[in-house]
Amino acid sequence: MIETRVSRGIVSTYMDKLQQNLELDVAIVGGGPSGIVAAYYLAKAGLKVAQFDRKLAPGGGMWGGAMMFNQIVIQEEAMDIVRDFHINYQPLDEGLYTMDSVESTSALLYHAVHAGATIFNCYSVEDVIFKDNKVSGVVVNWTPVLREGLHVDPLNILARVVVDGTGHDSEIAATVARKNGIRLATETGGVIGERSLDVIAGEDEVVKGTKEIYPGLYVCGMAASAVSGTPRMGPIFGGMLMSGKKVANEIIARLAR
Image (cartoon, rainbow, N blue to C red; front, side, top):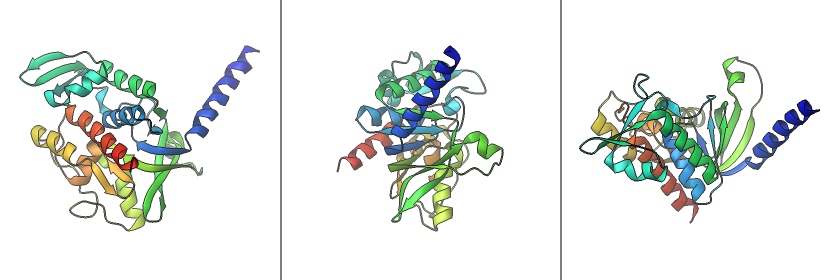
């Protein structure tokens, strides 16, 4: 019966996909634009990368533009990345461009998957694997399990590198510091928390703050801002894209050693 064939096809191919991603080069936590860009460049370099997002539709805040006006702004410095993803854009004024947020987010996801990255939606990363004083993977569960407060044990996925792309709360970095009594590579040793909005400073500092903050753990996007205590920047997304490319390049260089 076709009903059984449909169900069997979904279950069997999903289980194959999950089993193929139980050991990774890079696990990216959070499905925002910086993480998707990182997944794209990492996969293009031949690394085995999977991205885990708790929402049904990955893409973070890029879908909604600004206050649900589905347009975003990108500065000149990030336009090479926009062109890599073949996204349409229009000049705004000196050094700035506008793009449709729905097209932009869709393009990031499409190209990341076609480059070889695997994206798992409806997954929450509730902890990390911590071995030999190094972040060595992620502990995952279904998002609805955690939201309902069900007592269901998670699964473990090994990774040579973990990227915290969880946005404003920098959840993975905070969890690593809190649970293991370690100091992150920040002024306080912990997650400082993002400052109020300053577009110029925020865009510059989010890229500068994209780095390894503990052995095996990198931050990108707004998580990098939250960890280092730099300003948020609002609906201009060039810094997010550049942060994703920077973290990918640093990890590629690191794993090539």
